[in-house]
Image 1 (cartoon, rainbow, N blue to C red):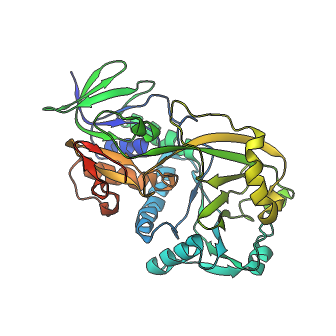
Image 2 (cartoon, helix red, strand yellow):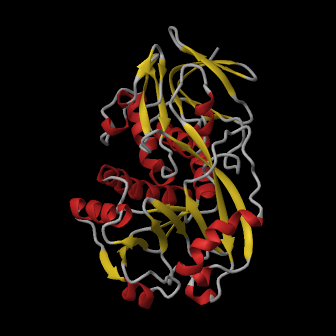
Length: 382
């Protein structure tokens, strides 16, 4: 039986980038996915994902996204595809809101370029937005839009061309330790020296040896026709996140050919990869339309399309990137919680570092499993 240097469970955003990085380092890789990425059944689809640098969640993410920018550019060069469109980004809310204050803190701490705009300045520069007089906009020039499907496809194509064995429609049932790690799938048994588990929502359903305190939420996405198409092109309209009530957000993208994509961040029902309601009927957009009516009325036109994806959330919203407590040769990666895609190539790098016992290029301490209580071999939520 052939033994591979590294096995990867889950070939979405993080698994595909880890496979590519490991093949770049000359390692033999075998990867498994229950579907065939890119697909519309997990977390990495919907035609667009935001990339932003003034990270309101915490300044600790800024070095990750800065490294990711470099690696996205490399992936574009290597694949010959355009994967990132720079539009600038606008964070809107009260000046001391979690969103605006957090973005400002990251920008100041890391010396990032940004502008703070009054409500009147936001309306003048970006007429599709109508913030209230007590709101401001923090504008960052490097933000933009990533194409998730094309990005995953490019990474997997390059990894495969470099020799990675990619096993699609082959769910992993179990892994076992020993002299080497044994992977049992629905089709066969495989041996690897090291293992990365990056199975997204399916990590929340108890893949043996990979128990994590995760909650999977259903996320609805909607595309609308704008009242004035000339105002919503990528050169006129930035990506935006808007804190419309304390710690409640909606976000959107300019029209890239399918309409203006807008969604409420988080607030989706608890679900699983197996049981999720995959259709988003028009009436499901009504709460979002009510939010948009005062703030982005020019985007609140006829509904063109909808989709559903999955947010796989940790209790604190931060990532999990760490070794399994059951076997240090196994690395668990759940950099999700609804804000992970932009970091994918940087995380692919650190996963390769970690699984090969090299010092990671970035600080992984904030994403350690040690922040969660452990009971026996199971990590329990707080």
